[in-house]
Amino acid sequence: MADTTLGTPEQLRDPNYMPPLGNAVPLGIQHVLAMFVSNVTPAIIVCGAAGIGFGSDQGALGFPDMNYMIQMSMLFAGIATLFQTIGMGPMGARLPIVQGTSFAFVPVMIPAVAGLGTAGLAGLMTGVMLGGVFHFCLGFVVGRIRYALPPLVTGLIVLMIGLALVKVGIQYAAGGVPKMGTPDFGSLAMWTPALVVVVVTLAIKFFARGFMAVAAVLVGIIAGYIVAYLMGQVSFANVGRASVFAAPMPFKWGFEFNAAIVIGMCFMAIVSAIETVGDVSGITKGGAGREATDKEISGATFADGAGTAIAGVFGGLPNTSFSQNVGLIAMTGVMSRHVVTIGAIFLILCGFVPKIGAVINTVPINVLGGGVIVMFGMVCASGVNMLSDVKWNRRNMVIFATALSVSLGLQLEPSALQHVGKTAQILLTSGLLPAAFIAIVLNLVLPENLNDD
Image (cartoon, rainbow, N blue to C red; front, side):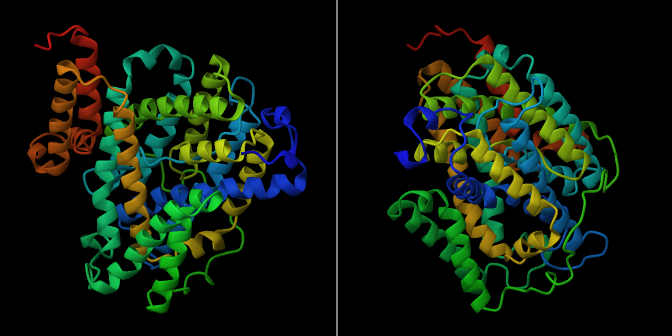
């Protein structure tokens, strides 16, 4: 229930209302804390896949590169959030929408930088930039393509995103991906802090109330971090070497066009756009008790794309609206976009301070693994929840079974595509593109009244 000392019920439902500053600032910081871990985690995962070391120097791709990408995750989450809350012409929903780095793109980005791709980080960032431009253009048509993406399709895609990531969570909890050569990979010393994160997160989620429940993963990671520190697994060596201030660098890793990465980014932009439509609808329903307008939906999509495109120029990753913050708005009852603007400014300030990224980089990979096990499991659960809205007749079961079997099979056995080109491998081995293509095509082609006898 909303705190009426912040304003009248009518004011709290108004996106243009500004609560007293003494309340608005902590409410804005609360939004940042609720999304902070999820926002920086994709950067850490992509760096790990690219062979960038955790808290160590490894030639050209070492500590400074991971630190920089974490920094950009904060900076451009803040900038993209300002696009949403303040707006610019047709861009921006002018609603309390928090933007952050998207997990949805991670299964496509990992193979792009982990050996299958030839362009590495230069190609990835070029793909992010061009995918963002495509995402921006979706703002003109997003309302007209929703019919092709019912819960059967979107739920399957979200489920596949989670399934593609759970392996990463287990690897990290065990001490990192095997290619990183962690000598005690899978040992009790690695698993102990990770399990502490999982247990504390679940305990907070189920037994705490209010903001603590929303920030359960953050609290769990803090607990695991303390245990890891006591076990001698935390190093602060790089914190002192990080500068106090640094500006973003355009095309830090260069510019290189890779068709597979660009196609993958463009396809996932469609998924992200539909996710944003759902988040905008959730905000207006939960915070203001009304449906979202077409102008708000298209404006939010424009802001999504612009934030992603600009992030790609400076070495950041794709941005999208964060669903956990939609729940936070429903919990607090404060619909003010200015509150979220304060949180965005805080993120931007953090993005200019590499020492903050360096501190984040001290979190051991196994501690992070404990957190992402829960987060990735929640992604799978979100997909299952979306699928609960599906009418499970024979038609829909055939669509789901075919798409799931092919896509999950390619994900589990990528060598089945060893004789196709590298572009096709990048596009298909994540499982997301085959799942979406099969589900969308079959859903459009098969008649609704397919015989169920």
